[in-house]
Image (tube, rainbow, N blue to C red):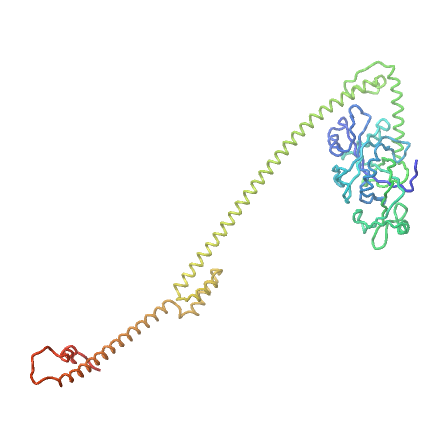
Length: 494
């Protein structure tokens, strides 16, 4: 086997597919958690297998070991996890399972992602694996893994998976502060700089710190090979992140020894069962310390299969009911959302119309008020067009109090323009004009009469000189006509 110059590990919490026989609610929860990543195994027929799933590592994000894998390397190696062994604490002599599936999921939500979806992204995402634990190899550990999925169990999230990777080349990724995302890093590929800064790498015994608050990390690339996964006990408040050496906790050693003893006892019982008579198990209580000594393996197997079948049917029925209720709830929710949207749209239309009506009403009221005020001004004052325009601009947006003050001001400034004053002045002027016209008419008549009389006198003197000696009766002369018409006694001469 090829030896690699460097090794690193990535950790995550193991999520098992819990059987309904153990706990039907945990079984349903486990389907939701890892259903898209577990291998397709008939657990009813293979009761000795415990399907599990976990995130092998987070691509594009530095791990606790100070190492990071980019998108390109993740795509190159993820299928190489398949068929690799699962052991205890990286002890390759204690293999208890294998990896069967590999894929991708969204960082933070574990939502499944396809290869096409991740090939161009720079943000963090998970490389997610699925496999099986061989229960018969270590039943106690298998049960501990199942219990670790129960939030109410003291072993909740207590088992984590630590993947060991081998590689020979790396680049440097420099980040500022506590930033762990590769997309924000300065990548260094110059071999001289890499050699100079490598002594600071955590994986090589350094602190990972540079000057000015920067930190340096190792980006593995080129030939990267998954070497196997080790299941390790996780402390209660912390996920075990780094395992760069082979180690076994005292509790794990105890579990392994217990498993070996259990296997030995099972083999002894099977030998006894070959000589015992058949016994059918109808209920769990039939399995006792005494009956185990004479039970055939097939009887236990038949009972387990029957119980699993019943549990499976019950689960299927409840799942159908749950799916039906979920579908109905979704339909009701969609109907309510649609109804809400329609009501909201209708309300928006009503509010739009209401606002428009209110605006029109306010505009009409303002127009009526303006008209009333201008009418009042026309009643109180005699205004010219220019004065009306100035007053209209002043009072257009006035409130009642301001308009009242404005009226008081106009009464002072335009008192000569008040209608009663102007009308009185016009009447006085008219009377004066009528008197002057009468005087002028009288003077014209007097002047005209005087001229006529003088002309008549003048004409009469001329005619007297021409009268013949013999007087004949004739019509009145012009003088006599005018004299009769304009007798001086009829006029009062001044």
